Every structure is written in C-alpha cells, then in structure tokens.
Image (cartoon, rainbow, N blue to C red; front, side, top):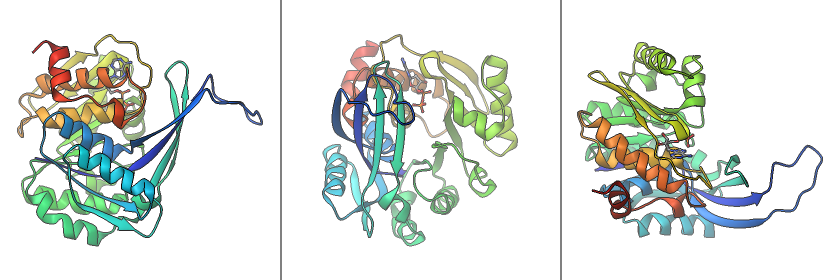
Length: 302
Ligand code: ADP
C-alpha cells in the first residue's frame, strides 16, 4: 500500500508557440483544464499502476476541489484524509510551448493550509502503509512530522524534493529513498550533474546528508540509481515528447507501485517507471496522461 502526502492542483494548460517576452502580449493556441499537482499525479500514477493508494491533502470548498476529489476517487484512491481548507484549491498555470517544454506558475492555496492536526489524524493511514511519499508543494513541517512517524513504524519513506529547495536535516534523516531530477540534485548537493561520475558524486553527497538510496532522473536520457547494495543506469525509452508535465511524478508513482520494501528490485521497478513516464510525455496534461498498468505492461511486451 502507498500513501501520498501532497498537493492537489487544477492545471490551466495554456498552449503557446513560445514564451512571451517582457511587455509582449501573445495569443494562445489553445487552453485546457486538467487535474494535477505533484501529490495527485504521483498518487494517480501509483494507483493506475496497480497499488492500493491513499491520499493525505487539502482542497478548498469550491468546484476545483470537487474536481480534484473526483479524479482521486475515479482512480480508486482512498480520500478519507483529504480535508477541506478555508482557502481556494491549489492551481497551476502552465505555459506549454510547441516544443513540449513547460514553464509553470503555482498558486499554493489549500495545499499550504495542511496542519499538524491533519497529520495526526492521518497516522493510522501512514502506519498501515508500505511506502509514504511526499514532495514540497505542501508545508515542509508536516512532511517532517509524517516522515518521523512513518520511520518509527517501519514504513519506507520516499522524498521527491520538488519544487527544489534546501531540505532540513530533520527530514533527510528520515528519508529512505530520494528521487530527484537534475535541477533538484544540483540545488541539494551543489553538484552539477552531467556525466556518470557526477551522478555518483551527487548520490554520495546525499548519503553523507543521511539518505542512503538515490534515484536521479535525467529526463530523456534516463535514470541513475545508487542504493546501499546496487548502482546502475537505466536508459529512457525513445519517444516523441509533446508535454513533459508530470514525467517525474508518473515515474515516482509507477516506481512505488512495483518496488519491494527492501529495494532489491529497484532496477526492474525503474524500467517499469521509465515506460510509464515515456507513455505520459506523449500526451498533454498531467493526470490525463498517466497510463494504466495494462498499457505499461503491453508497451513493455510483458
Ligand atoms: P521531472 O519531470 O521531475 O523533471 P525528468 O524530466 O527527469 O523528471 O523525467 C523523469 C523520467 O521520465 C525520466 O527518468 C525518463 O524515464 C522519463 N522521461 C522524461 N522525459 C522523457 C522523454 N522526453 N522521453 C522519454 N522518457 C522521458
């Protein structure tokens, strides 16, 4: 069972030819609304890949909140720890360029209203999990509390330190596995990741900071992993990306659905996660693009 503590955002996807310059007014090619938020994306990826999944988070008492709850429920995610905040539901404004690159502005809203009381109330759910996953779109103090409790109860904790910021030691010391992209790696370790020796140096730096197991996702290149027992690189699948929003989230959610608690099958789980995210980048939108177990297995030919 996977529990995700995190954000729920309604995404406003604005399709544009290129980014506007300062002072420039441009017309968009198209606009769409889709469910998103790193937390929601990761939970839906885990659930669609077959994991029994629960969510801890907050929405506003508005239409957007209802929409997000429906997305989770449609994926059969346990939403009993998704509560109402006195703030509007989180939103993201995504500028999606023709070349598939995106620039994102986030309104935290209800996500920022998550309190210690919410974590307290969700403890039975955390205790009952194999994995607890979180990111940084909800308050970091609550992540610290939840991870400390998870570790006390033998739950495997996975941190996706995104959007990138410095991570307090109290959190790092309770992280079993960290999954991060190139930008996040550079911000956390001060090491610019380019070639294999820099991946290893970054993982070793993270180990010094207290995290023994690391996966660095390298976009269309693939993913590098270093655990206590193993190290390797898994190439990404060659596809044409139209929207890379939620590539990392799909990767992480799909990974958690396949991973053994002792991480011994990490390489196989990464292959599965790479295929799930390669399928996701070929479709527009975060939640709409996240594939199901059958689709991933079919694409893998298994
Ligand atoms: P994030 O979305 O967090 O920045 P990455 O860009 O590193 O994360 O992508 C996560 C994973 O998604 C990669 O390790 C890779 O497996 C897959 N992926 C991302 N972009 C592509 C792409 N253009 N083609 C194929 N796979 C991709």
